[in-house]
Each structure stands twice: as C-alpha cells, then as structure tokens.
Length: 237
Image 1 (cartoon, rainbow, N blue to C red):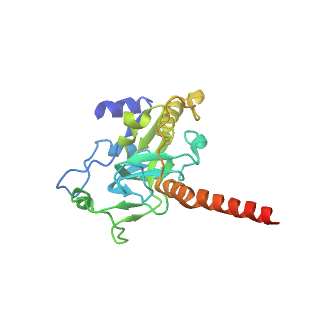
Image 2: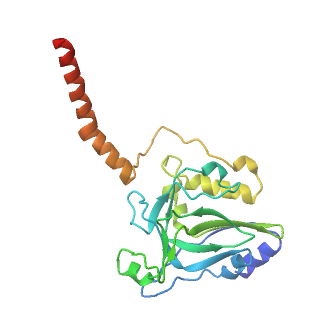
Image 3: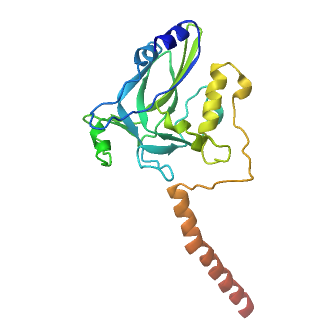
C-alpha cells in the first residue's frame, strides 16, 4: 500500500475498486488498507454493506442490484444518465469536498449494518437505529494536488462476464472506460460505445418480465377479441 501512496503523492491517477468483503463469522468488513489515502480526498469507506431492492437479473437479491438512476453530475458519468448499471457486494462510501459522487443508490436502498445476517443467508431489513438511509454513495471521484482518483465501492461488477461486448443490458463496461478516460484526461474515451448485434443476450428485469407476461396473456388476446367484435359489428351494420 505504501507504493500506491507514493504513486498518488507523485501525481499518479488511481482507479480503486474496493467492494464489501464479508468474512464468515465476522461482524465487520475486511479493510483494504487504502482507507486513509481516500479519506484525504474526501472519500471515506464505511463499515456497512449497501443493499437495494432494485433487482439484478439472476443474482442474489439486495446484495446485487441494477440501478438506472443515481448518476452524478461529472464528466465520467454525464453520458450515462438513465443507463443501467449492475453492482455486486457494495460497500458504503461517505463523500465530502473536494470529492464528487458518481453513483448512488435509489431512495429505497440503504447501508446495512448487520453483516452477520448475510453470512446466515437472512434477507436484510432496514433498521433506522443502526442502518444508513438511502440514497447511499457507492462511487466517487476526487482531484487533489494534480492527482485524480475514482473509488467504486464494488469490485465484482467488473467481472469479465459483465464486461462482455454483447451484454447490452448493462453499462458497467462503459462506466469503467469513462473512468479511465477521465483519469487519463482522454475525452475521446468518454461516452457510450456501440455494441455488436450478432449475438445479443436479452435479460429482462422483473417489472419488464411482468409487463411482457401481461402483454402476451392479456394484451394480445384482448386485442384480437376486440378486433373480432369490431369486424362482426361492421358486418352486421
């Protein structure tokens, strides 16, 4: 960690992905060793796990979630507003000047203090006495002394399975490339990139799947019935 601190002190730029590492049998999160370095730039790691009821398709509820809102006002995220991003095993952040929030949870999300509940497989429940109410920052950027830094409270969202070019339902890959573009001051890397359409994997969120089911079971048959009645009425007239 001393090498990283010296690199940053010399003006180096850093992209830090540090999620919530839950140790079995422990009531706290594993430290990453860079808490003091990020705190100097207004980004502090909390000791709670961020959860959000916005589901991520095929993943563990609450611990993994997909957000479409909560993007901050920053060059690295300006073109991602309204786009989905999926995050896993997220650690809470506290953001203070000179840092800027890049991503935060919805108002329904929160930072869960009961770490042991996750190891027991229990579903989290918000407790206002110990939990932190959302929106909770989960990614932030800071610039100080000629050095730029982006901290994301999740590392698993950068798994290869989620960064494939054919994954069109998630913009984590674009966020990472935008982060690198801002850190390296290469504006050409900021934006949304086209995805190949040869092999598209369609993944629907729960609300989208429910809409499709209603459309297939009620909407289309209902439309056919109404159309048939209208044709019958026209013939009788």
